[in-house]
Image 1 (cartoon, helix red, strand yellow):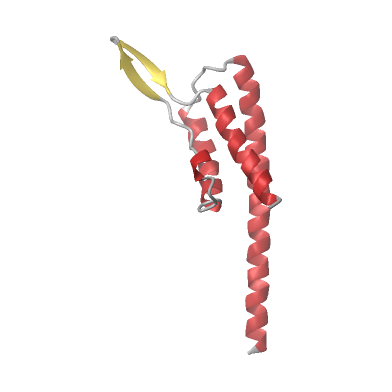
Image 2 (cartoon, helix red, strand yellow):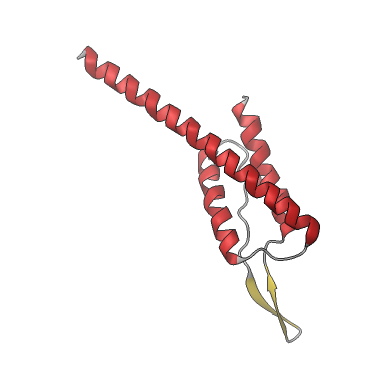
Amino acid sequence: MAEDGQEAVDQAYQDYNLAIERLDLLHSILYEILCTIQRQAKKTPDAVISAYKVQKINANLKEIRDMYQNSGYEDLLELLEEPHKVMEDGVEHIEGTTYSDAEILLHYYVELMIHKSFS
């Protein structure tokens, strides 16, 4: 019986370490994405991010958002808006998250991950 208890403790420790490794990896990935977005925002701040990029970025953001569920910071953790066509005065154009908007949103995630890792 004592071995079963030790196995459960060992498994919980392994699960915890994997979760920490995953969080570190997501933080690194998100930081690199943010750096790329910042570079592009300097060149074309009002350009809309492609649907493919938004989907890939949002996949990471959703995982991070799930980790911080019930943290009290949910209002900061928005997803990027996918590009979509809009008709305005008979002219069709694309709307969605711009590089400058994404830069702001991604900063929230990065800073939350840094802040919460020290608390």
